[in-house]
Length: 248
Ligand SMILES: [Zn+2]
Image (cartoon, rainbow, N blue to C red; front, side, top):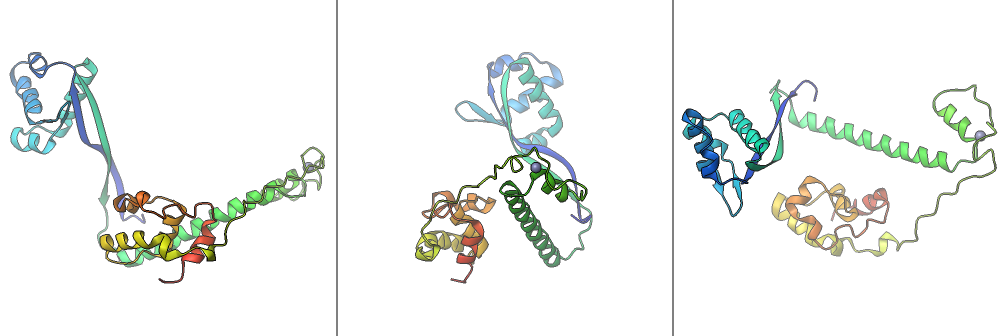
């Protein structure tokens, strides 16, 4: 990220545990200051039917218990077989090294960078498919790809040299995209997007919806449950995108 941020550390934001030993029995194993500390963990963790959620904020504010010490204690209890411990929501922490960047310019630059990455990845896949189906010696083609101009025209060993040219299967016939109705496939999705974000989804976003490619936003929109999700997953992404491109 251009020296703007730097990764620092990662931690689990949420811990919950289940007693394998009654809390009183667990507490009885400790004395003095440690007993107070363990008691604070037990008392501040809200207990649902079986699982207790650790409240790090309360532990810190009311008992000056440092997060690191609490986690260490929980790990120790688990090791001893006194509790079953679960951690989740891995959180990455970054330091902001330079706050004076132009976010508009940076997002334009990043978007351009990812578009370029996407285009080169797609070109690479096409080059690979072309190689599979080539009627030229495979060894010669590979050598040429890696810049070796000295390789013989025919290696005499590969499948092509043995007269077996691979034929990739044709994609299954599909109803022309023009016969689909964008509005009826995406209507509900567009409404929900508008309600949450305040604007109409981009053609890129619609294409992901229609092709069934999940992005973080779709979790918030519960997009998987909306009719039309993945309705066009059998079609090439680029074809769906150019079909969805005209503004609605
Ligand atoms: Zn060959």
